[in-house]
Length: 363
Ligand code: GLY
Image 1 (spheres, rainbow, N blue to C red):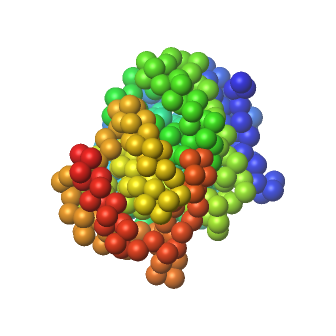
Image 2: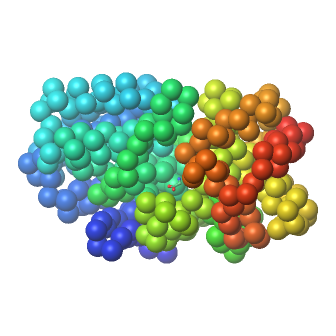
């Protein structure tokens, strides 16, 4: 297995994903970007600010000057107000169009910094330094950036590709267990939607993954990134197959919202995947046995498989505000089989209601 993957879309944009066990080689990557007289702003949240000094030490000598910005951790801060404060900071520090932002943190940091980079002075460059499993395997790749708006998740955003994604995999060792589990939700998703062999590999390597065996985690992150890269290269703007990556997300987002973001994104996606697998089984696409196996596999990775503190009708209603609507119809992702997802626009409220009732009973 290599230490690098390249994401390349018709030469319009191209960037490397670097897999490494420290920040030791970050300077080499930064050198390639010719930033020697450019300003850098390392943005992190209150959880990931502890990596700022190390990153600063690695890049000094390859950049003009380094500024930092920290905002409080949590989905509730992924807002236009935080973006506004970051704009203010950049203006105060006289950042111009040639300067660059570093997103050092998980999905909230990556999405928010990416959006700020997409819009500040009509677009400046940014680099992703993901520190959580979820941001490594999903949100740091593919250029989706954005913030939440009122209770609407990722409602304001832009496609803006990073110049480089650098993963220090050792940050996973200290990740709180529920955040690791949240990332596993997105990892398992790749198996369900496009790669049955990978799904079985994950089951076989369960113990090594859960004990954070470095080589196994590296292989898992690398392969997940490979899965995502292939999809976003074929469909960067989600005109078609990229929507398959939303498996588990329609009901997952609705649950996340109705639970007031008490659960992490990937934890809600896992519950949403079970709901979608239930609907797939009811339609006869997958077997009852495959549904039961999915429940037990998801559970084995310390993910909740159900939740009972939600109102089923309210959850179904919340799906109507989801971005995954087209001409008033939800683009719902079901499993045609394990390892192959399909987009369906004929899913009824009754099917969703039955699925939510099902996951409530699993709680
Ligand atoms: N997280 C889904 C996507 O990037 O399309």
